[in-house]
Image (cartoon, rainbow over all chains, first blue to last red; front, side, top):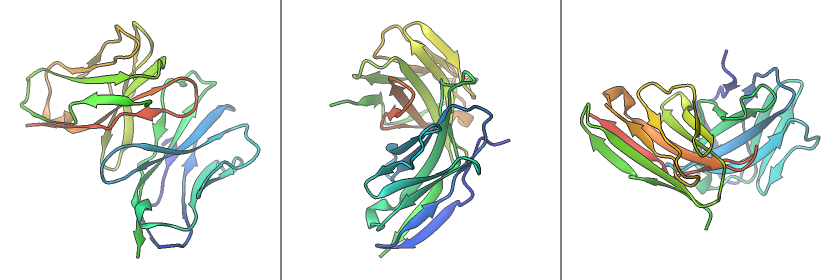
Length: 117
Length: 111
């Protein structure tokens, strides 16, 4: 079974509107971290936001927030007030700690976001 | 400036010709990893290292080698590249369990 599932291969949003990118995960660990990365067309991987499994509050970083629903195993990224520069591929990733897999990030297949003027 | 530096950024080579992609970080991080990115598959880990002289396989290690002789460097070696190793490669480093810092990526084409 896939550990990270991003069901939206592509998304469109109007400039200045908010958009939610979906991510569900699968783990039996109690301790894990969830990440979102942005990959613009230039190719680099840009870290956006992190949520620890024991964090009670949803993480926020500027216009980015992570809607963490632990019971549903979802970690959706919300981008408020979209800008043209937000057009990029977005990856959700997880690091499991307790199972000994702290060595790696497991990535989803990504969502290509296009912001329309 | 904290960074992970990969070289080269772009490489076209022929099947069977050994190549090395270098990776260097200036943050004194213990953990370093190599990932490959393929369309529809996200990033998959090739090898990782927890410290000098300590390396282990990730999910897709076949056809690759690594070494960690110094803390800052973690080169990826393809002894006999094949076309199915055409991909975008990323080196990453981290200190703890949170953010991983990624290099700029190396786009490799094997013909």
